[in-house]
Length: 442
Image (cartoon, rainbow, N blue to C red):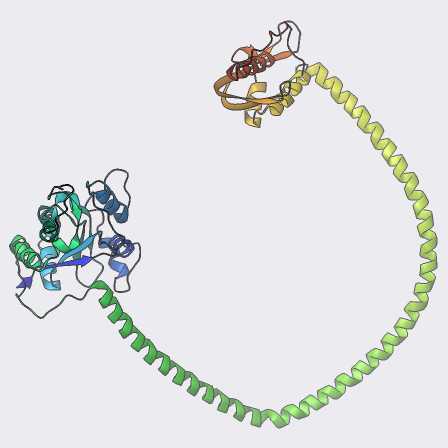
């Protein structure tokens, strides 16, 4: 019959190690990557807005009503490991009872250590034996062990309630309590064919870190043996290649030397002949270069004069053509797009006061454009903010092919003046009444 295995591991105060192992944000060397997809995470849901085991632990501590100061060295979380041997766990899996086994384990831990203290759980199927991790925050409400000793102190300024919440892993892991947990856990797991371990057994659980250290030591020994064998093999291969090279070198050295000498003599003669030909060619080129230099100087002087004349004529031609094209272009625009000139002015103005191009394009299309943000007034040399306004370019009813930009239905220049007046009033100044005008030209 297989044993019901229940083991408690204290997590360090930083929570990094337990969180990485349980949530598999780091992958231990003894885990099989090919079985990692069988793992189950999030078997205990985190509170709303909480992500990750470490955050869930801190959230439980912060909301438990603990009044005593918590030191940096206190144990904040207990890693409870539930499992059996390979045979026992495989029977549970083959019987289709794995889900119920997980649920019974979580229920037993909640009933034993407090439902609110259970903050996370995960099933690991990628290690040698399937096992369940349940993270428990060690919050207790029993009276402190030091209470009796403190009672002997005469000065008592106030009486504190004995059942207030405390963070204390030692109370949970007291020797008698640990034995009682084993009894209760074995009773809960009996329906899965698991029994309690032998009382007083010399067997001890090897914790995760010690197991990893053993693996590392064995790995180091194997790597050392492999390295020594590899070094020896490389040494023998090197000696073999050296001997083969020496044999080949001795066999070919005489022939190679004779061939090299003959080749060198031939190359040397070719170099001498080439050198004589190059010297003769260099003399001829030097004489030709002197003649060409004088001719080139004369041509450059003539070319400079011609280039200046040609450049001047080309520039004049281009200028005349460009001016004619431009005048024709302006006439075509005035004829076919009479609104364009005023639209261009308003487009530049929209860009100047701070509208992005995509808004300016819609405004010029005479769309009603909603916006929020700041606009710059050249008249007041000031930016004004709005949390929600709309801009629209409307035709001027008094002038053909002219437009008026309005913001919130008001002429943009009047809108800036109104914004300036409101700003002055907010600062405590009484602005002068503006003179009536038809607006401001852009």
